[in-house]
Amino acid sequence: MRRTGTIAIGIKAPIIRQGDDLVAITLDSIKKAREELGFSVDDRDVICITEAVVAKSQGNFVTVDEIAIDLKRKFAHMKENEALGVVFPIMSRNRFSLILKGIAKAFPKVVIQLSLPTDEVGNPLIDEEEYYRLGFDFLNQTMDEEEFRSHFPKPLHPFTGVDYPEYYKEVAGKEAKIIFSNNPLAILAYTSNVIVANIHKRALTKRILEKGGVKKVVALDEIMNEPVGNSGCHPLYGVLGSNKSTEESLKLFPRDSQWLVETIQKRIFEETGKKVEVMVYGDGAFKDPVGGIWELADPVVSPFHTAGLVGTPNEIKFKYVVDTALHELTGSAAEMALQELILNKEASLLGKEVSLGTTPRRYTDLLGSLADLMGGSGDKGTPIIYIKGYFDNYAS
Image (cartoon, rainbow, N blue to C red; front, side):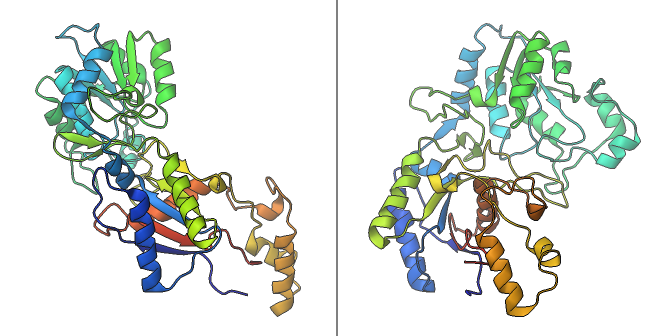
Protein backbone atom coordinates (compact mmCIF):
# COMPACT_ATOMS: atom_id res chain seq x y z
CA MET A 1 0.00 0.00 0.00
CA ARG A 2 1.18 3.52 -0.80
CA ARG A 3 1.53 5.35 2.53
CA THR A 4 0.84 8.88 1.34
CA GLY A 5 -2.57 10.40 0.73
CA THR A 6 -3.50 13.83 -0.57
CA ILE A 7 -0.59 16.19 -1.28
CA ALA A 8 -1.10 19.85 -2.23
CA ILE A 9 1.78 21.82 -3.75
CA GLY A 10 1.84 25.59 -4.14
CA ILE A 11 3.44 26.49 -7.47
CA LYS A 12 5.00 29.89 -8.06
CA ALA A 13 4.45 31.60 -11.38
CA PRO A 14 5.68 34.76 -13.08
CA ILE A 15 3.78 38.00 -12.48
CA ILE A 16 0.78 37.74 -14.79
CA ARG A 17 -0.46 40.70 -16.80
CA GLN A 18 -3.24 41.37 -19.27
CA GLY A 19 -2.78 39.43 -22.50
CA ASP A 20 -0.42 36.82 -21.05
CA ASP A 21 -0.75 33.23 -22.29
CA LEU A 22 -2.06 31.56 -19.13
CA VAL A 23 -2.02 28.08 -20.64
CA ALA A 24 1.70 28.34 -21.44
CA ILE A 25 2.49 29.93 -18.08
CA THR A 26 0.62 27.21 -16.18
CA LEU A 27 2.26 24.35 -18.06
CA ASP A 28 5.74 25.87 -17.77
CA SER A 29 5.33 26.58 -14.04
CA ILE A 30 4.20 23.01 -13.38
CA LYS A 31 7.11 21.63 -15.45
CA LYS A 32 9.64 23.64 -13.43
CA ALA A 33 8.03 22.57 -10.13
CA ARG A 34 8.16 18.93 -11.22
CA GLU A 35 11.86 19.25 -12.04
CA GLU A 36 12.49 20.83 -8.66
CA LEU A 37 10.48 18.37 -6.53
CA GLY A 38 10.52 15.28 -8.74
CA PHE A 39 6.79 14.51 -8.62
CA SER A 40 4.96 12.69 -11.41
CA VAL A 41 1.80 13.59 -13.29
CA ASP A 42 -0.91 10.99 -12.64
CA ASP A 43 -4.50 10.47 -13.68
CA ARG A 44 -6.93 12.58 -11.63
CA ASP A 45 -4.32 14.96 -10.28
CA VAL A 46 -5.99 18.36 -9.90
CA ILE A 47 -4.62 21.70 -11.08
CA CYS A 48 -6.22 24.71 -9.40
CA ILE A 49 -5.68 28.21 -10.82
CA THR A 50 -6.78 31.24 -8.83
CA GLU A 51 -9.46 33.36 -10.46
CA ALA A 52 -7.38 36.51 -9.89
CA VAL A 53 -4.77 35.65 -12.52
CA VAL A 54 -7.42 34.41 -14.95
CA ALA A 55 -9.29 37.72 -14.79
CA LYS A 56 -6.01 39.66 -14.98
CA SER A 57 -4.88 37.85 -18.11
CA GLN A 58 -8.29 38.63 -19.64
CA GLY A 59 -8.05 42.30 -18.69
CA ASN A 60 -11.47 42.09 -17.05
CA PHE A 61 -11.37 45.43 -15.22
CA VAL A 62 -13.84 48.27 -14.72
CA THR A 63 -13.41 51.77 -13.32
CA VAL A 64 -15.44 53.70 -10.77
CA ASP A 65 -16.55 56.04 -13.57
CA GLU A 66 -17.77 53.11 -15.68
CA ILE A 67 -19.79 51.76 -12.73
CA ALA A 68 -21.36 55.21 -12.33
CA ILE A 69 -22.28 55.36 -16.04
CA ASP A 70 -23.86 51.90 -15.89
CA LEU A 71 -25.90 52.84 -12.81
CA LYS A 72 -27.06 56.06 -14.44
CA ARG A 73 -28.50 54.10 -17.35
CA LYS A 74 -30.04 51.45 -15.09
CA PHE A 75 -31.71 54.08 -12.91
CA ALA A 76 -32.34 56.55 -15.72
CA HIS A 77 -35.80 57.39 -14.36
CA MET A 78 -34.38 58.86 -11.15
CA LYS A 79 -34.05 62.57 -10.59
CA GLU A 80 -30.68 63.97 -9.60
CA ASN A 81 -31.68 64.80 -6.02
CA GLU A 82 -33.36 61.45 -5.32
CA ALA A 83 -31.81 59.00 -2.85
CA LEU A 84 -30.65 55.55 -3.91
CA GLY A 85 -30.79 52.72 -1.36
CA VAL A 86 -28.10 50.08 -0.88
CA VAL A 87 -29.23 47.04 1.10
CA PHE A 88 -26.97 44.61 2.96
CA PRO A 89 -23.47 45.28 1.56
CA ILE A 90 -20.75 43.16 3.10
CA MET A 91 -18.20 45.04 5.19
CA SER A 92 -15.10 44.85 3.06
CA ARG A 93 -12.79 47.56 1.76
CA ASN A 94 -11.50 45.14 -0.86
CA ARG A 95 -14.89 43.91 -2.04
CA PHE A 96 -17.30 46.81 -1.72
CA SER A 97 -15.63 50.19 -1.22
CA LEU A 98 -15.07 50.95 -4.92
CA ILE A 99 -18.53 49.71 -5.87
CA LEU A 100 -19.92 52.15 -3.29
CA LYS A 101 -17.68 54.88 -4.69
CA GLY A 102 -19.21 54.30 -8.13
CA ILE A 103 -22.73 54.31 -6.68
CA ALA A 104 -22.09 57.63 -4.92
CA LYS A 105 -20.61 59.11 -8.07
CA ALA A 106 -23.84 58.34 -9.91
CA PHE A 107 -26.20 59.31 -7.06
CA PRO A 108 -24.74 61.47 -4.27
CA LYS A 109 -27.67 60.79 -1.92
CA VAL A 110 -27.13 57.21 -0.80
CA VAL A 111 -28.90 55.39 2.05
CA ILE A 112 -26.90 52.33 3.15
CA GLN A 113 -28.71 49.66 5.15
CA LEU A 114 -26.44 47.39 7.23
CA SER A 115 -27.53 44.13 8.84
CA LEU A 116 -26.86 43.17 12.45
CA PRO A 117 -24.98 41.71 14.21
CA THR A 118 -23.00 40.62 11.11
CA ASP A 119 -23.10 40.99 7.36
CA GLU A 120 -24.06 38.07 5.13
CA VAL A 121 -20.61 36.45 5.20
CA GLY A 122 -20.08 36.86 8.95
CA ASN A 123 -18.10 40.10 9.27
CA PRO A 124 -19.19 41.30 12.73
CA LEU A 125 -20.48 44.85 13.00
CA ILE A 126 -21.16 44.50 16.72
CA ASP A 127 -20.59 41.84 19.35
CA GLU A 128 -23.20 39.11 18.85
CA GLU A 129 -23.65 38.41 22.56
CA GLU A 130 -24.17 42.12 23.27
CA TYR A 131 -26.68 42.33 20.42
CA TYR A 132 -28.80 39.57 21.93
CA ARG A 133 -28.30 40.76 25.51
CA LEU A 134 -29.83 44.13 24.63
CA GLY A 135 -32.84 42.35 23.16
CA PHE A 136 -33.18 44.30 19.93
CA ASP A 137 -35.74 43.14 17.38
CA PHE A 138 -33.95 44.05 14.18
CA LEU A 139 -36.34 42.15 11.95
CA ASN A 140 -39.00 44.73 12.74
CA GLN A 141 -36.90 47.54 14.20
CA THR A 142 -34.83 50.11 12.34
CA MET A 143 -32.21 52.38 13.89
CA ASP A 144 -30.57 55.44 12.45
CA GLU A 145 -26.89 56.06 13.11
CA GLU A 146 -27.48 58.30 16.13
CA GLU A 147 -29.49 55.66 17.96
CA PHE A 148 -27.09 52.92 16.88
CA ARG A 149 -24.09 54.79 18.28
CA SER A 150 -25.88 55.44 21.55
CA HIS A 151 -25.61 51.66 22.08
CA PHE A 152 -22.45 50.91 20.09
CA PRO A 153 -20.25 54.06 20.02
CA LYS A 154 -17.26 52.60 18.20
CA PRO A 155 -17.97 49.34 16.36
CA LEU A 156 -14.58 48.12 15.15
CA HIS A 157 -14.03 45.10 12.92
CA PRO A 158 -12.04 42.58 15.03
CA PHE A 159 -9.48 41.85 12.30
CA THR A 160 -9.11 45.15 10.45
CA GLY A 161 -10.01 47.66 13.19
CA VAL A 162 -12.27 49.54 10.74
CA ASP A 163 -15.44 51.33 11.83
CA TYR A 164 -17.46 50.36 8.75
CA PRO A 165 -20.46 52.68 9.18
CA GLU A 166 -18.02 55.59 9.45
CA TYR A 167 -15.85 54.31 6.61
CA TYR A 168 -18.76 53.75 4.21
CA LYS A 169 -20.09 57.23 4.96
CA GLU A 170 -16.69 58.68 4.07
CA VAL A 171 -16.65 56.72 0.79
CA ALA A 172 -20.24 57.62 -0.11
CA GLY A 173 -19.87 61.32 0.70
CA LYS A 174 -21.40 63.93 2.96
CA GLU A 175 -25.00 63.28 1.84
CA ALA A 176 -24.84 59.57 2.71
CA LYS A 177 -27.01 58.10 5.44
CA ILE A 178 -26.59 54.81 7.33
CA ILE A 179 -29.48 52.78 8.79
CA PHE A 180 -29.48 49.46 10.61
CA SER A 181 -32.10 46.74 10.14
CA ASN A 182 -32.35 43.11 9.07
CA ASN A 183 -35.63 43.74 7.25
CA PRO A 184 -34.92 44.70 3.61
CA LEU A 185 -38.24 46.57 3.47
CA ALA A 186 -36.86 49.13 5.93
CA ILE A 187 -35.09 50.88 3.05
CA LEU A 188 -38.44 51.74 1.44
CA ALA A 189 -39.05 54.38 4.10
CA TYR A 190 -36.16 56.31 2.54
CA THR A 191 -36.29 55.47 -1.18
CA SER A 192 -38.07 53.24 -3.68
CA ASN A 193 -34.95 52.73 -5.82
CA VAL A 194 -32.63 50.09 -4.40
CA ILE A 195 -29.42 48.19 -5.05
CA VAL A 196 -29.36 44.74 -3.44
CA ALA A 197 -25.75 44.31 -2.33
CA ASN A 198 -25.70 40.94 -0.59
CA ILE A 199 -24.29 37.94 -2.43
CA HIS A 200 -25.79 34.54 -1.75
CA LYS A 201 -29.31 35.64 -0.80
CA ARG A 202 -29.60 38.39 -3.38
CA ALA A 203 -32.49 36.73 -5.24
CA LEU A 204 -34.53 36.38 -2.04
CA THR A 205 -33.81 39.99 -1.02
CA LYS A 206 -34.92 41.16 -4.47
CA ARG A 207 -38.18 39.19 -4.28
CA ILE A 208 -39.00 40.63 -0.85
CA LEU A 209 -38.44 44.18 -2.12
CA GLU A 210 -40.44 43.58 -5.28
CA LYS A 211 -43.37 42.27 -3.25
CA GLY A 212 -42.96 45.25 -0.92
CA GLY A 213 -43.52 47.75 -3.72
CA VAL A 214 -40.03 48.87 -4.71
CA LYS A 215 -39.98 50.96 -7.89
CA LYS A 216 -36.65 49.69 -9.23
CA VAL A 217 -34.31 47.11 -7.75
CA VAL A 218 -30.95 45.99 -9.14
CA ALA A 219 -28.56 43.41 -7.65
CA LEU A 220 -24.77 43.51 -7.87
CA ASP A 221 -24.82 40.80 -10.53
CA GLU A 222 -26.75 43.23 -12.74
CA ILE A 223 -24.18 46.02 -12.46
CA MET A 224 -21.52 45.92 -15.22
CA ASN A 225 -23.14 42.82 -16.69
CA GLU A 226 -22.48 44.44 -20.05
CA PRO A 227 -19.59 46.71 -21.05
CA VAL A 228 -19.48 50.48 -20.87
CA GLY A 229 -17.49 51.38 -23.98
CA ASN A 230 -14.38 49.17 -23.91
CA SER A 231 -14.68 48.23 -20.24
CA GLY A 232 -14.67 44.76 -18.81
CA CYS A 233 -17.92 43.13 -17.71
CA HIS A 234 -19.38 39.87 -16.46
CA PRO A 235 -22.68 38.83 -18.10
CA LEU A 236 -23.55 36.42 -15.28
CA TYR A 237 -22.11 37.97 -12.11
CA GLY A 238 -21.63 41.68 -12.83
CA VAL A 239 -19.51 43.14 -10.02
CA LEU A 240 -20.05 40.14 -7.75
CA GLY A 241 -16.69 38.54 -7.00
CA SER A 242 -14.80 41.72 -7.85
CA ASN A 243 -11.70 42.92 -5.99
CA LYS A 244 -10.11 46.33 -5.60
CA SER A 245 -7.28 46.69 -8.13
CA THR A 246 -6.34 50.38 -7.83
CA GLU A 247 -7.97 53.36 -6.14
CA GLU A 248 -10.17 53.81 -9.21
CA SER A 249 -10.55 50.32 -10.71
CA LEU A 250 -11.90 46.86 -9.91
CA LYS A 251 -10.88 43.46 -11.19
CA LEU A 252 -14.03 41.51 -12.02
CA PHE A 253 -14.61 37.76 -11.69
CA PRO A 254 -13.20 35.89 -14.71
CA ARG A 255 -15.51 35.10 -17.62
CA ASP A 256 -15.55 32.71 -20.60
CA SER A 257 -12.78 30.44 -19.29
CA GLN A 258 -14.10 26.92 -19.75
CA TRP A 259 -11.76 26.74 -22.73
CA LEU A 260 -8.82 27.43 -20.40
CA VAL A 261 -9.35 24.45 -18.09
CA GLU A 262 -10.12 22.12 -20.98
CA THR A 263 -7.08 23.27 -22.99
CA ILE A 264 -4.72 22.70 -20.05
CA GLN A 265 -6.23 19.24 -19.50
CA LYS A 266 -5.81 18.43 -23.21
CA ARG A 267 -2.21 19.69 -23.40
CA ILE A 268 -1.13 17.66 -20.38
CA PHE A 269 -2.77 14.54 -21.81
CA GLU A 270 -0.93 15.07 -25.10
CA GLU A 271 2.39 15.44 -23.26
CA THR A 272 2.02 12.72 -20.60
CA GLY A 273 -0.90 10.46 -21.48
CA LYS A 274 -2.44 11.31 -18.11
CA LYS A 275 -5.89 12.84 -17.66
CA VAL A 276 -5.73 15.49 -14.96
CA GLU A 277 -8.59 17.68 -13.77
CA VAL A 278 -8.35 21.48 -13.88
CA MET A 279 -10.35 24.18 -12.11
CA VAL A 280 -10.42 27.94 -11.66
CA TYR A 281 -11.06 28.75 -8.00
CA GLY A 282 -11.93 31.83 -5.97
CA ASP A 283 -12.79 32.02 -2.29
CA GLY A 284 -12.86 28.77 -0.37
CA ALA A 285 -16.14 27.76 1.24
CA PHE A 286 -14.98 27.67 4.85
CA LYS A 287 -15.72 29.61 8.02
CA ASP A 288 -13.12 31.16 10.31
CA PRO A 289 -13.68 29.68 13.79
CA VAL A 290 -12.44 32.75 15.68
CA GLY A 291 -13.86 35.70 13.75
CA GLY A 292 -16.92 33.82 12.51
CA ILE A 293 -16.29 35.06 8.97
CA TRP A 294 -17.44 32.83 6.15
CA GLU A 295 -14.78 33.26 3.47
CA LEU A 296 -17.04 32.89 0.45
CA ALA A 297 -17.47 36.46 -0.81
CA ASP A 298 -17.35 35.24 -4.43
CA PRO A 299 -20.63 34.11 -6.00
CA VAL A 300 -19.26 30.56 -6.43
CA VAL A 301 -16.07 28.75 -5.44
CA SER A 302 -15.26 27.49 -8.94
CA PRO A 303 -16.72 29.20 -12.01
CA PHE A 304 -14.91 26.86 -14.44
CA HIS A 305 -13.75 23.24 -14.09
CA THR A 306 -13.33 20.07 -16.12
CA ALA A 307 -16.08 17.46 -16.15
CA GLY A 308 -14.35 15.07 -13.74
CA LEU A 309 -14.84 17.55 -10.90
CA VAL A 310 -18.62 17.49 -11.08
CA GLY A 311 -20.27 15.67 -8.18
CA THR A 312 -19.72 14.89 -4.51
CA PRO A 313 -17.62 12.28 -2.67
CA ASN A 314 -19.19 8.88 -2.01
CA GLU A 315 -17.26 7.69 1.02
CA ILE A 316 -17.71 5.35 3.94
CA LYS A 317 -16.89 6.66 7.41
CA PHE A 318 -13.50 5.14 8.20
CA LYS A 319 -13.69 5.20 12.01
CA TYR A 320 -17.37 4.14 12.09
CA VAL A 321 -16.67 0.98 10.05
CA VAL A 322 -13.52 0.18 12.08
CA ASP A 323 -15.45 0.48 15.34
CA THR A 324 -18.49 -1.52 14.15
CA ALA A 325 -18.17 -4.01 11.29
CA LEU A 326 -14.44 -4.55 11.79
CA HIS A 327 -14.18 -4.25 15.57
CA GLU A 328 -13.05 -7.87 16.02
CA LEU A 329 -10.28 -7.68 13.40
CA THR A 330 -6.73 -6.39 13.85
CA GLY A 331 -3.58 -5.85 11.81
CA SER A 332 -3.46 -6.88 8.17
CA ALA A 333 -6.80 -8.68 8.42
CA ALA A 334 -8.50 -5.42 9.38
CA GLU A 335 -6.68 -3.55 6.61
CA MET A 336 -7.72 -6.07 3.96
CA ALA A 337 -11.31 -6.16 5.19
CA LEU A 338 -11.53 -2.37 5.11
CA GLN A 339 -10.10 -2.24 1.59
CA GLU A 340 -12.67 -4.80 0.51
CA LEU A 341 -15.51 -2.72 1.95
CA ILE A 342 -14.27 0.37 0.12
CA LEU A 343 -13.86 -1.45 -3.19
CA ASN A 344 -17.37 -2.92 -2.98
CA LYS A 345 -19.28 0.05 -1.56
CA GLU A 346 -22.59 1.01 -3.12
CA ALA A 347 -22.71 3.53 -5.95
CA SER A 348 -24.61 5.92 -3.66
CA LEU A 349 -24.22 5.91 0.12
CA LEU A 350 -26.56 8.87 0.61
CA GLY A 351 -28.45 8.41 3.87
CA LYS A 352 -26.65 5.16 4.76
CA GLU A 353 -25.29 4.63 8.29
CA VAL A 354 -21.93 3.65 6.85
CA SER A 355 -21.44 7.18 5.46
CA LEU A 356 -22.62 8.97 8.61
CA GLY A 357 -20.64 12.20 9.16
CA THR A 358 -18.90 12.34 5.76
CA THR A 359 -20.84 15.49 4.67
CA PRO A 360 -20.75 15.12 0.87
CA ARG A 361 -19.99 18.67 -0.27
CA ARG A 362 -19.21 19.28 -3.94
CA TYR A 363 -15.72 18.40 -5.13
CA THR A 364 -15.18 21.93 -6.43
CA ASP A 365 -16.05 23.44 -3.05
CA LEU A 366 -13.77 21.06 -1.17
CA LEU A 367 -10.86 21.43 -3.57
CA GLY A 368 -11.37 25.19 -3.84
CA SER A 369 -11.20 25.51 -0.06
CA LEU A 370 -7.97 23.50 0.02
CA ALA A 371 -6.47 25.57 -2.78
CA ASP A 372 -7.54 28.86 -1.18
CA LEU A 373 -5.95 27.88 2.14
CA MET A 374 -2.76 26.85 0.35
CA GLY A 375 -2.48 29.87 -1.92
CA GLY A 376 -3.88 32.50 0.40
CA SER A 377 -4.55 36.07 -0.68
CA GLY A 378 -1.25 37.54 0.52
CA ASP A 379 2.30 37.40 -0.77
CA LYS A 380 2.87 33.66 -1.22
CA GLY A 381 2.97 34.06 -4.99
CA THR A 382 1.53 30.61 -5.72
CA PRO A 383 -1.48 31.17 -8.00
CA ILE A 384 -1.38 27.52 -9.08
CA ILE A 385 -2.03 24.68 -6.64
CA TYR A 386 -1.19 21.14 -7.76
CA ILE A 387 -3.09 18.46 -5.83
CA LYS A 388 -2.15 14.79 -5.92
CA GLY A 389 -4.00 11.81 -4.51
CA TYR A 390 -7.23 13.60 -3.70
CA PHE A 391 -9.34 10.88 -5.28
CA ASP A 392 -7.36 8.07 -3.65
CA ASN A 393 -8.68 6.09 -0.71
CA TYR A 394 -7.47 3.40 1.66
CA ALA A 395 -7.92 0.79 -1.07
CA SER A 396 -5.96 2.65 -3.76
